Length: 455
Image (cartoon, rainbow, N blue to C red):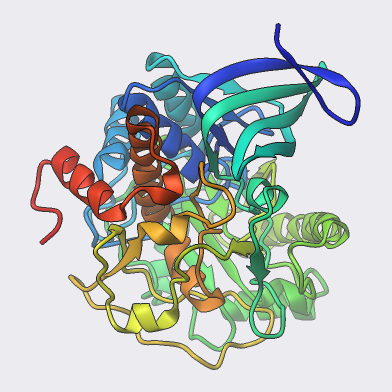
């Protein structure tokens, strides 16, 4: 087995591939699938033991609504979910619903079927660069350190880990250096959802407009007229809740998991920097304390929850924003306002600028209307510093505000599909990723989508 020296220590090269994807989350899994569809040898390095990242391990479901038609890999995943008897369409919204276990299984199945390699329980450590290119990465496994050699590398770590160690400059947070709020999600079972639905309707709830009995959503934000607010205020008065528990409350059903809801809360207070490892650890302990209050309060106060119980805490925090690379093009909120088009536009977004900020954001552009969108240029995925690196996910090159729009899962999947196409094009034509003309990839995408995608 080939070895390389790492701090004067020989470590074996575990894989030698065309494409190495660091991070098996929403972006990484799709980038790998796309590369495998293009018939290049691909490995995913994932720090947990399941694919899907924030979608599955942080319990972030469903996918937020978009009117932009999903690309081929997105459709491939949805079709496979349907074969697993997971309904993804609620008949009312443009959300794409799933349950976390099935999605993780489907992503793994699709990759394994195509001959892809998955290295689970492996943490990224560092990279080697030669002549402006990454030659190897180092990962830590249950058996110690190994190296992986590849022709192309995809940074799908969400925290720009590979990019930062490769010398790519990054930014973080808003103008004051503050990041978006962290959530720590959880699931409860034993919920009588028909009874909960009837109770909410009887209270005059107008938040959930979904009529499909298999889907349901509840929410409470103080001062917004939500019917649950008086019940939460009473919980505060009775000492069951604290003020911080009332800041944001939301829960969704999960198709295929009867009597279960996934909670998009609590929002962790007073954590200003998501890049600080000690603060992330503090967010876990604080979030767990808040979860325990909620799971005790709900059965005592809300009809439908009388026999409910905690069945799962997220395996990772819900991090909305941390680092963002400074790539060849920085996508900005002005591009959002302009509904920007680019010659190298390779994905489209239409989600509003959705800032869950520690401090209120003064600039809040109006949401785009149905049919309006902006494009994400290929140049926002590549860097000057590493020729064979492409970046996909919430940490592509953008401003703080623009990131709050492009970070949703459907948009991330679409940009990741192009990353796989780009890696294959690089390998087959011996052109570095950061020298490929994005307009060529746009044309490649149009050919694969089988539609006039460029119009």
